[in-house]
Amino acid sequence: MNPRKKVHPALNVLYVVGLVLFFVAFMFPFAWMIISSFKTQSEILTMPPKWIFTPTFKNYVEVFEGQDFLMYMLNSFVIAVGATLAALVLGLPAAYAIARRRLPSLGFTILVARIVPGITFLIPWFMIFSRLKMVDTMPALILAHMLVTMPFVVWVMIPFFEGIPNDLIDAARVDGCTEQYAFLRVVLPISGPGIITGSIMAFVFSWNNFMFSMILSGVHTKTLPVAIFNFLSYSEVNWGGLMAASVIITLPVLVLALMTQKYIVRGLTAGAVKG
Image (cartoon, rainbow, N blue to C red):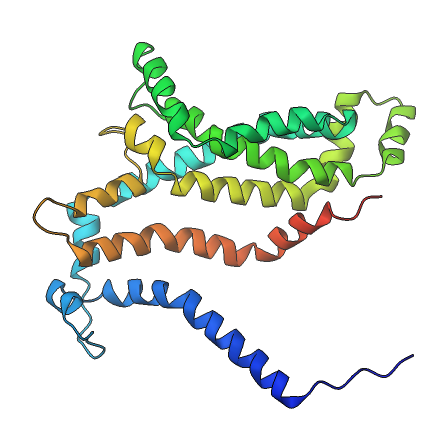
């Protein structure tokens, strides 16, 4: 066994410095947002920035009492969960069929829905839902968000299903399983990391979606990204409330990502090794 090559101390220092700079650049906007959410309007606009101040919870009180953000959070959660579940129900069988039948062209066709700018679908969606009287309803927003969630689920799961050995599925078929039963009882149970990864990423994309929610939502279905506009007016921007609302939108997704990061990494890399 060859001895490990010693790394020059200067390279170690540069590596650490690079990591620190990357971490600071990545976390600075989020830290600035959190700090500003505890400042008053005048303190936020003060230049140079005021680093020593008395924190206030007024912005968060205004968000929850003056803007009914609990309802907006519930709307966002219901729509994101609905769009994710619908994407799994349709996307998992589609990804399995594409992987088993070797249909890359069909997979690319599904991916087009993710590549094409969402505004391309916006006017047709609005016209269809207007005639069906479905504007400002949860089903309309869930269907619209599926344009974001389902292609991602399909493209995460295609390489994962391709990595499952065909002998495993053939053995299930020999034991009397139908193709559908083998998919439900054999393939899905061992595809947990990929399903979790696709679900989490689809949920995040739906949670953060603004464009479809802006046009298709209304008083009863307004989501968090749309609700942020309540802090913008023609003459003034309520920076404190805007920062507090941004923290509320970002925090659930950040906590979810931190709690499930090992599953995300495992799911994204599982399809890289094929049996």
